Image (cartoon, rainbow, N blue to C red; front, side):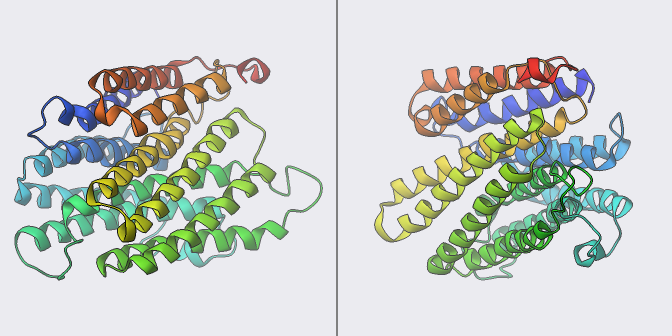
Length: 369
């Protein structure tokens, strides 16, 4: 990825976070949609498509997706729903065009034994992105025009966090791509094959069921699925610790999976809070859950993808990871109630992105870790 693209993504991701805290300065406005869409869809979706095409520069299709997703975020924020629907449908076509060119029209790879779990997660990420765009259209229509599904949860303000799932899947794809195979060591690791398949189907089917239970407003079933997903993520963590290739990326991805475990814990706490907590406490838990998910787990994966061909890079991994954790924990726990901490947090976040994106590549792995 060239420096121009890195700067564009740094700027968009920083602006996205700024919108997340603008309500501290302009309390009568709600910038949540811009905050989420600019990070998940505009930045994250574009990076997924760019990574999928595997070209040195962005194609016209990916550039079009980036521009239109930016306009979609603005239209959704301004409540220009007719425009948002048209843009979402065009974005769907762009994603499907790239998905089909990279894989096939029917996702037969899901059921092929020889297809790696990494490729399956990659395909699932693209498919989830396109399905998410269609569901966003349904959510807008259900909320503003025709009540297709009688559920208060099927609305844009509830659904837009769903665009983070494609980012999770592409990060899992990268993680499994950076695991040992039979060619990497003498003894066979065929015993891990079935476990990887179980993880893939558990995570994907689990999230689908979780979404359905949200629509059905069934907190108890949501809690059960959340615990199943937490178990699956825990298995991913131990599996990656066991067979992950010893490269610089491993430190960042392990940090990311720790964020994901924390996301799962806060998600479970959020569901339990349905039964015992006041509405304000429930909203606060959801806020912490979203921040850790977006700027902890998802950002770890996107940062690695943006530098995918550059590793190892000239930076001290542990120091940068510590900066990342301090930034996210400050944002998650304190900045929502302090303008000063919000400004400091945004500055630290921008510094993390700058160091991650613009540190020079290195051939000396030991010096970089």
